[in-house]
Every structure is written in structure tokens, then in C-alpha cells.
Length: 223
Image (cartoon, rainbow, N blue to C red; front, side):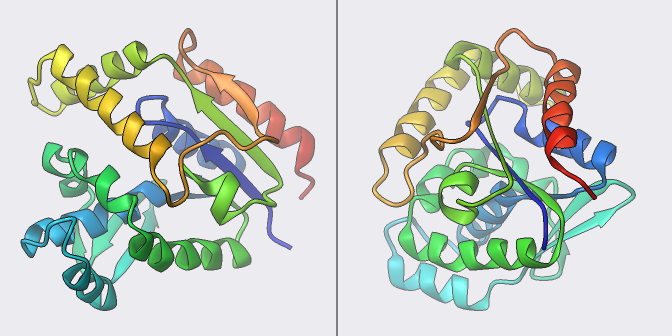
């Protein structure tokens, strides 16, 4: 039987970094489901397909090939054979991924792929519906959260590190809009699983968050 840790939470709570660190410390395979939705979004952008063109999105999904490859502790994302690890993190993808991820046909395509990965491996998987939809019976469910303002500050700093000088107010507005889209969508709305352990990262640094989650995992996982 595989051991599954589900880490859910909104953008800006540190999910990606935390999940990577947990993977390094515990040996659990790190799976970033958000990268899969970003790949679909990027492919639609590249092909000029808008979010309301369902028949064209269906064609994209029928031909898309997404692979998450782990090399030297880092996850690389391949879309149709090309490394798009950096391209899926650009602002153009940021602005549209929540809309594509809300589509039933997209989630119906990616959810079984995510579940298949968890059938054969001990994993730590991060996303927004891992503990509610993908693995409702996960061994451990963690829900990371923090204030909208803190999430915007973190994303603003991330953008500056990438050379993207988007005003803080614009980042905050985008964070608020995305939160609204994700929590109010009809398909797999973004909610905290009832049985998840809440970790509020607003006043915590990454190491403090990782330490807390690692303790939770060590107490429950007996290899």
C-alpha cells in the first residue's frame, strides 16, 4: 500500500517550496498537480484556444502529453516532450490557469492521471483538491493557508525575483480574483477538507512550516 500526503492550499502559502522540502527530508515523491493544469493552460495559449472553446480544449486534451520528471531533487515539467518548467510559471499562465482549471473536461482528464501516480508510489502531492477529490482517503491531509495580503506580498517578491515588476496592488487584485474563482467554481470548488490539519503560514517562515509538517508525517508514517 502506498502512503499519501495531501497538501492543499491557495497560491502564496508556500505549497510548492514546502512540498519540495518535505520530499527531500522524507523521501516521499513530490507531485505538483498545479503544474499539470498550467501545462494545459500553456498549450491552449500556444494554440490560441480560449477558455470558452470547449470543443477545441477537448482536442488539446486528447493530444497532450504531460510528464513530471524528478532529477537531482528537482521536478522538471515536460509538455509534449519539451521542458516547460519555467514557461508554465509566467504571468500569462498565472492569469488564466484558474479559469482552465475550473473546467470539468480538464479536471476529468487530469484527476485520473494524478490518482494513478499515487497508486504505485509513496507521495506528497500538492494542489487545491487533493484531499477532497483526488485522494479523499489520503493518509495525511494538510491545509496551508495565510492572509490574502501576505499571499500577495509573497507573490510580489517572487515576481521581482523573476524580473517581473508588477505593482503590489495589481498582484493583490489578481490573488483576490483567483481566490474567488477557485472557491466559487461549480466543479471541485476549493475548500478545506473537513479532516485536514490546518497550518496557517501567515506568521511562519518556510523552515517552521516544513518542521511542523514533517513531525506530523513522521508520527503517522511507519516505513
